[in-house]
Length: 441
Image (cartoon, rainbow, N blue to C red):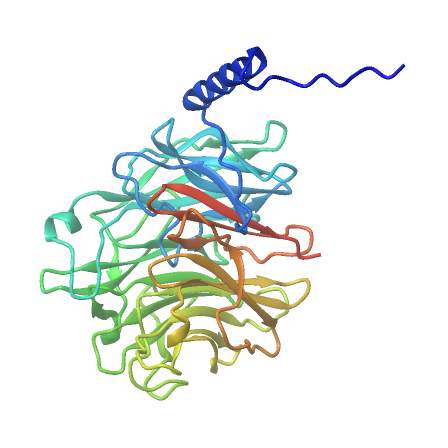
């Protein structure tokens, strides 16, 4: 015999119990940090909060890399709101959740780090410097420039426990004072190199370089790159990388002149520290005339195929519709530069970033639009024939609630089908991380 269906009186006891249960769940949610689920319109994965006093744009700066791949996992420098410090985090591939480890890198809220995993030496290097906000026409105060410091941290990895441990004798103070950005690279002889720009009292800046000497913990005296083009504006930044197996390259923007150019200085490993050859990477008729530079650049090198090519994602100062605002620069092994437009002025891209899939010989380029933050877009092209379609690109990180996502970052390493490609970014108003994991297989 079929039992009659019991129909609840929604004004009766079952409804009161349901309301009580909802109230209890809301109370628990108010006290437990529950990850915010992605909305229907979202692209990418929302992550933990980085809210804290003095913490801003933790995935910046444009030239820096916060991620690395090691032991089949993706790792990141991320601010821990509970620990009030930048800590090493590990991405769980199955759940796509960032797991906080116990390893503290830097407890200063205004410090941003650049991470380099050295496979040959088995060490993780992080150069972490306190930062100043320096915009075009709005230089930082000299008090801000002279306060703070940049430090070098070194960690060893234990494969059995999947943990990083700080090495004895670190951190090492590299310089006194703050800068907008600082990056690190390692040459074929084992020397570490850093570069950064320092704003002077006359509101110009100069491109500085320094390197380790007898050990990772011993460093020389910082010096300005020996070229008159190393005097730039307060808004300019620099970046360093190793390339061609035996060279170090420093690239920087220079907005002081009418031409607004990007420059590259090349140093042969083992040569005197002030022996550099400087070339124009973009501007002054080299693929561009007029306002060709802005303080946005991101470097990658392709060392696996013997070509010795360098790739640089850059932003220009173009202002007229139809002009190139964001481009990818390519330097071949003979020092010849070419460029491929990524986005026009009307696309309103900012914060460009480049990545190389060495297995499938693809170059991936990312940028944010609009310029105040919003969506991370990508385009990709063959390494041997770089050309991007017009338009904003394909969204890879976008939120229906966090409308100001900005400052994408990833690893210095080239990626493969096995590693995949991970991009980390953050929303500013809601102080929340976002990331995207791209399957390259």
